[in-house]
Image 1 (tube, rainbow, N blue to C red):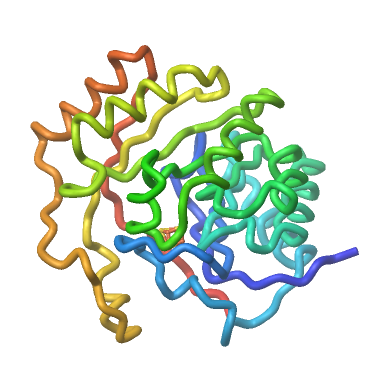
Image 2: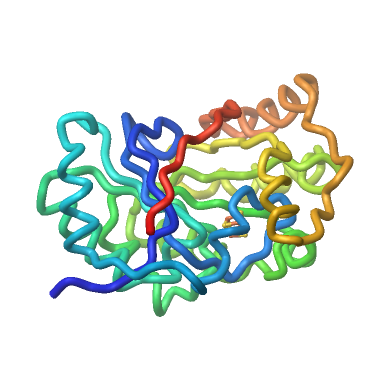
Length: 254
Ligand code: SF4
C-alpha cells in the first residue's frame, strides 16, 4: 500500500550524501532548530503538497541509469519524522536493487526510527555536539536520542558515516573534538567520520523566512583549524573525510 508523505525537494545527481552518485530526496519536517541550518524551509509540514511513496519510487527509477552503482539517500529536514513513508520508499528501492542511505540527526526516538534503521543500508548520522547542554543550545534539543541511535547501530552492526559540523566558537574546539574522537573510536560500526566546516550559505533563507540568524558574524573555519580537527580524529584511528562546500542543486517539489 502506497504511503502518503511530504517531500521538500530532490537532487538528482548528488555526490555528497553516500557512496557514488545519489538521488537525494529531501523530506519535509524537522524538530531541531540548528542555528546553522541550511534548510529552515524544511522545518514545518505546513503548506507542502502531499505525495505518495509509489509515485516517489517511480520517479527515482526513471533515473536508474544515471544513479548506476550509487543509490538513493533520504535527507531533509529530518527524514525520520515521516518513518512510514521513509520505510516504504527504502523497501521499494532495495527491492529494485538500489543502495539506500538515510541522512539523520538521530533526534527521533528509537521506537519510531528502528524499523527504518533496520532496513536501510547506510546511516549518515549527524552528532551536533557530544555535550548535551551545547547540543541543546545549538539545536534546541539534547543529544540523548542521537547517542541512543548510534548505540543501536552498533548493536545491530549497521554501517554508519558519522557527521559533525565544525562551528567556530561552538564545536570547533580542540578539547571538545578530542572528547568526541575518544568516544567515537569505540564504535566499530563507524566507517567514516565526515567533518563539515561551518558556512553561512543558508543565511538568506532565514532572512526570507523572517527568522533571526544568530550565527551572524561567525567566520568560516580556516585551513589550520580544519587540519587540527582532522588530526584529532585520525589520531584515534578514525577514517576522516573533510567535506568540501558544494552548492546543491535542488528541484522544488510541489
Ligand atoms: S537537523 Fe538538519 S534540517 Fe533539522 S534544523 Fe538541524 S540542520 Fe536543519
